[in-house]
Length: 101
Image (cartoon, rainbow, N blue to C red):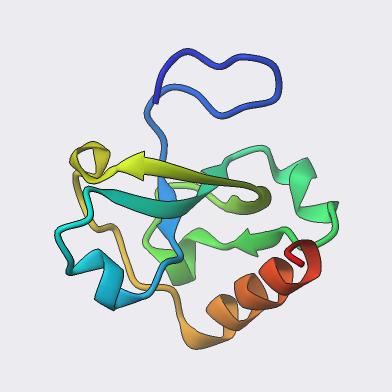
């Protein structure tokens, strides 16, 4: 990601891929992700999900910032840190349902 502008994400950071595997495995060169932040205050925002480092493989306790759904080129993805435990992913899905039509 590029330099942040306004409230948008910027710089290199972990993301959570939220599109279906069929799209991930396709020739489409982009992927839909949710930005992950270390700003733990954002865990209190509606729909956001706390991601504890002990259950995610992330280096720090973090937050899935559900309001920052972005599409990025797949070439920006480097390492797979972890697959979210089902309970956390269900919370992410609930957050997405909260903000999407």
